[in-house]
Image (cartoon, rainbow, N blue to C red):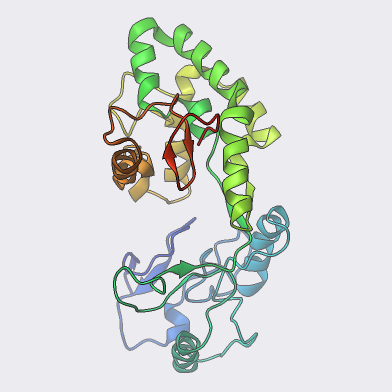
Length: 284
């Protein structure tokens, strides 16, 4: 039978394309793809984020779980909440329906229906450790100002600015993020600030990390976009960067409520929580 790659139910992380039989009368076993791990001939489990068998999925999860403090549950298909795995598709779907009616797996968000503006209309998570992308833009020229710097002085000027920004990360970004996360009982991990990752990026020529002759969404963070496409994360690999405070318009709302307008909001303003502007020497 001819085979064609699946598209409608592919997991977020896809390292290889599975095959789905075109004959609907074939057994579910024959339609299941093979584990993507090289040398493994076992069948992958439907719903596995790695498209792997149970043994290989554990191998994939091991290093990531260790990095996150051995508390990660990355694959809900191989880590069901009740600790049991059904052999039949019908039983698996029934188990899935039961889980939706009870509690979600650890680390998975849940939304309770509630009227708008209600305090109950919140998304909560059991995860204590969060992954942060801090450091990617500073090392691979991801901000819009980097393109302006390149246009002003070329790659040499851009290289000097990136080095300056990486050097001030601990003071400008990490301290702020740590205070925000700690206030909510969370911890952060910074994959792009890993010593090995930073050392490798330092060895690459700047022209390979970014190409400012290409348009937005292609040239900035060029090497990172290439890696995303290599592992199958294609749709978001060409998105133009936009900070969440601007994309959600929360920055404009906040500036207007605190300062009266966005133009009056500057980094030199002094504010005190719940009191607005005054002369106190407290930076917010």
